Image (cartoon, rainbow, N blue to C red):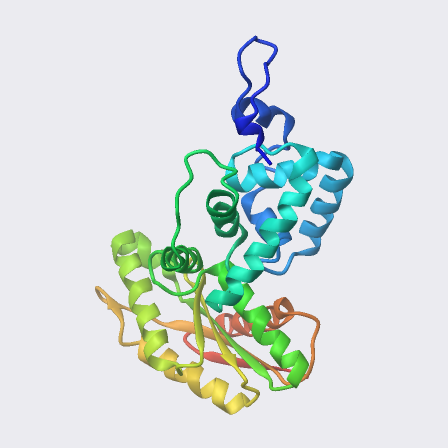
Length: 301
């Protein structure tokens, strides 16, 4: 089995056609993004909008759909007649590797490893050891500045905990934190000081939470703490208050740093992890509206 890269065909100009030429016959990279392909491969839960996009792509592109998937994540062209079967093999490799490492291996890493090391479909293959795969996976899961789990990994881990909650009824709680007036801090003190505050807050989260809790940078100045196997509102509030109090020890010039925290405790089955985040976001909004630097708890009934 060979990729289109190794089976160049003449183009209209008379020269061999390469991947850049073939891109004209694949879907636009802006439409078939790496993030969309990642979601389609099961790296995280797909939104309804993403599901609709995928359905439209499959209907419009026919056999070229799987060629588009590969081009989005590898920038290599695979002919439609081999792409679908190859996609299934890459997915199987992703699941096997994830099981071996005990964590989700994203489709981009799985595809690179499979196509380079297993089938040699890509030219100039790079051998990747299991330790290096683990390092790549870890880097793809972490926020580069704070070292906490990033936004997409937050959803992945929350989905896993939510499945456990839904199956065993063990409960799950969520803290959504936002630094108060962070834009003002950046404007007055510069982005370097703003970055320092983000790093210190991340360190505070790790220090003030339990070993089993999952700390994430959700985006910008927003952070999430997932409390697995937790359905006690008092415990969730206690952890949130501990974080809020400790953060007041962080300062930037004359300005004391504070956070507002929204807490959602899910005691019964709800529709999705996103619904739990929405409830925490509602509680966070109430904390901001009520004067900031406070914790607001919302229990999902």
